[in-house]
Image (cartoon, rainbow, N blue to C red; front, side, top):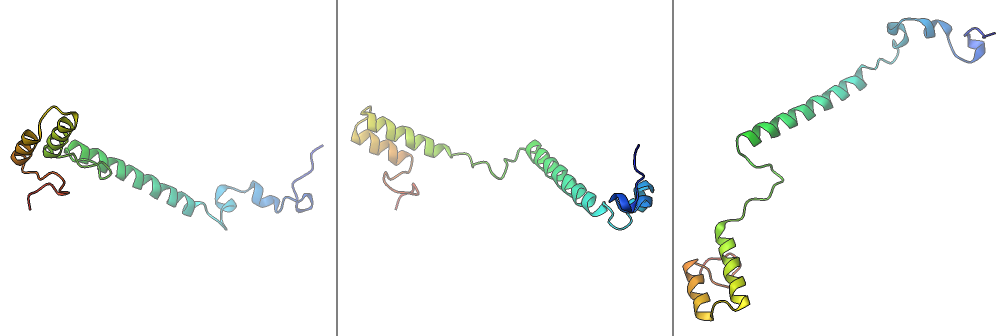
Length: 111
């Protein structure tokens, strides 16, 4: 036979166990925890909406690298062709000057 739920059984006040939700959570309502969870969900939804809207407008995400300018790709191809021996030193320097590039300089412009 089951024991009645009493303080002697080690379960605390029996009236609090069988009372309605308002009486059960009177001392410690779960609302702060639910409020924080709801805030996090709303922040996440806002972030997703911002990313979708900015992507639709054609902007790149903040973490994506900026696209490489075409001049850098042309310089790289020119340097690779020179390294392979496809072009001579004179051709290399002539084409580098057309690109306004001084080989060996870091920023790529003439000084």
